[in-house]
Length: 223
Image (cartoon, rainbow, N blue to C red; front, side, top):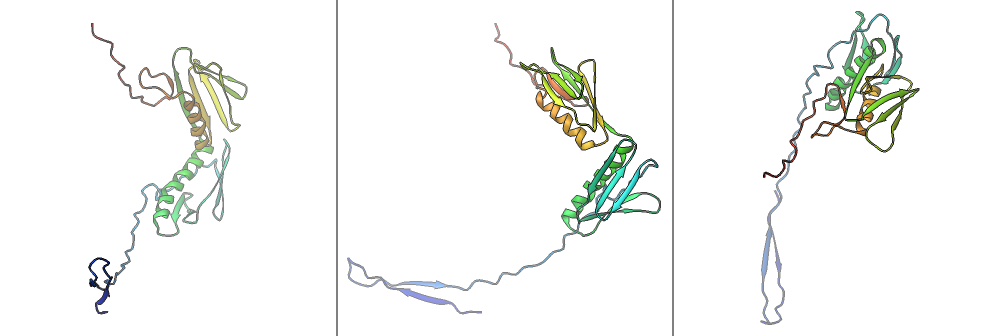
């Protein structure tokens, strides 16, 4: 251990004419130690569940690339290096981690869900329903366009993707269906974004299972 150091500084005073001595002592710094600790990642409850493959769905796996083909369409997905997909003898698919890291634990459950959505999507499909609430609000399908009247000075026209089907019932109920769940959700969210439901009267575009929290309006003056 190094010994203490003492340094002296002797400035000359312009007024007193003598020397003032300041002594500054410095002590050595203590050595800092580092300890390594292994992070133990728990197994994802979602990620460890197997994925059932129907008989009408074809699976093509090449390295980290997956292609799923069914009666409704075809989807593809590339897996990160933290996880891998294996096919068991029983016919089930299982997503496994290749490394034990926090990111691998996050990717485990995520890509298991994405894989299951692909298998269900090409075999059964998904749908999302929206409701228009408001006086004069209505929707119609004209060819490959969804036309919305939401109280603006002009109608809103949205191009419908080729992989989606849009159906309007009673002019206020919209059903978006297809085999790609993420594309269905994105299109429905874009429709809702044009006129989100407001909390006072509930006017706007909302999901069929959405609960709008209402607020009480301002009370008038008491007479």
